[in-house]
Amino acid sequence: MNRALGMTFAFAYLVLCFATLTYWLPHFFAANFQLMPELSYRYVTATGLPFGVLLVTTVARQSFKGFFSITMFFQVFTAAALLYAALYAFYYPAQANFFCAAHLFICASGIGWNLYHHRKELERYHRTAAVAGA
Image (cartoon, rainbow, N blue to C red; front, side, top):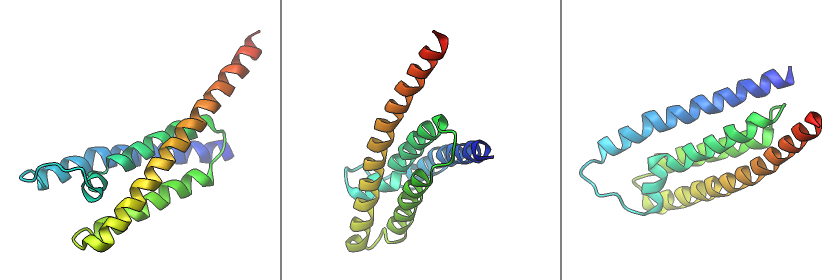
């Protein structure tokens, strides 16, 4: 049951990732076609790319686990809540800058954390497979 629940949530992360990247990004660029892209907290957050990459790394890491990780769920939930708050306060720069910076920080630290642990879990998987094959 735990493995089925973990796979269900991993699939839900994957669907959410593709929904973010295929729906939000084209709509964002279509609505802001006349504006030049800028490297600011608000613009980078509003593209949805950091959140999409966080979801991809979460799916990759969850795929090796045989159980549902509540830590990864809270990682994604916190990033999504901060993204919502940033978009809600988007036209009030004093609040939006804080929420956007916090969202980007959570995404960057989550991506780094997930990639590091995914690499370790992948090495552990290969070691186990080599021992089982020998």
